[in-house]
Image 1: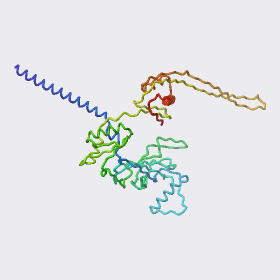
Image 2 (image 1 turned 120 degrees about the vertical axis):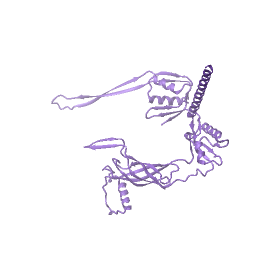
Image 3 (image 1 turned 90 degrees about the vertical axis):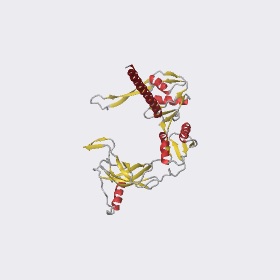
Amino acid sequence: MLNNMNTNFSSHWKKFVLILLLDIALFISSLSFSHVAHADRIKDLATIQGVRSNQLVGYGIVVGLDGTGDQTTQTPFTVQSMLSMMKQLGVNLPEGTKLQLKNVAAVLLTSSLPPFAQPGQTLDVTVSSIGNAKSLRGGTLVMTPLKGADGQTYAIAQGNLVVGGVGASANGSTAQVNHLSVGRISNGATVERALPSDINIANTVTLELKETDFSTASLMTDTINRFFGAATAQALNGRVIQVSPPAGKSRIAFLAELESINMAPAKANAKIILNARTGSVVMNQAVRLESCAISHGNLSVVISSSPVISQPQPFSSGETVVAEISQIEINKEPGKIVPIPAGASLSDVVKALNAIGTTPQDLLAILQAMKAAGSLRADLEVI
């Protein structure tokens, strides 16, 4: 009986130890996974030279509008386009014919040809009115070539427009929701020509950092060399890294591995973005300050005018005179001095300035003054 109890206790103890070891292993793996998840992939930090999209543009005609097309007397190019298209379709109109069209609109088409696009692939197309059409809702785009910067045709677009707005008018009153002069055709263009690519021919692959940074370029070079072996990557400058694929390895498989490598980039430069129109201030964590003192005071001037009417006596020959009396009031709040210690983060400065009642526009001026005084260790960019 005692032996059976010892055997059961031993088996339970072994199960407990195994479960404990399994939990510890899962915990360690979760820690390692979370550490990797915080790193950035090379594909998020850099692009491969030559792998890029190309812009396409075209001029076309939208037909089938419900009386909301271009006013042809003010947009003669719409009539010219219709006459040219009808002539190509075998319809010859007498010279001097004046068309009064209401269901036609001249449009510009824009699209983007992705890298490695092949003939037969479809693209989304954005259609925008260039005349005075009231709405493109319900229109159909007639077959239109899309050309690249070299003047070559790379795609053909045609189809029904989808407009994300709606409008109505009656008896001089109008109501409109969203934009009616821009539409979109999903999969509305078909690629007819492929762009040549030398990615499988070139001896090297060139990476281009999205942001120029010598530290990140050096870290990326070291990371690639540790992953594929020494002398695989070489940084040419703060933005371009030249990579030599290993011999005998598929180029596509190599690029897939290269893009998936995780690395921690260098810290960004201290930078502050100021939006003068909205008063927005965006800063990164690298911003630091030197010792300084800030004085802030508001000055407001209020001018109000009120009319004064002087009327003559009854049955007199005088005239009614209207004059204005203006009152000017100047309010000045006392200035407040805020000391800022060295090394304080910009968030501390913003909190202190908000505490004394600075407006967003005041904050923009104060930050620019601190930069001019040499107390702000950051780049200011006004957008």
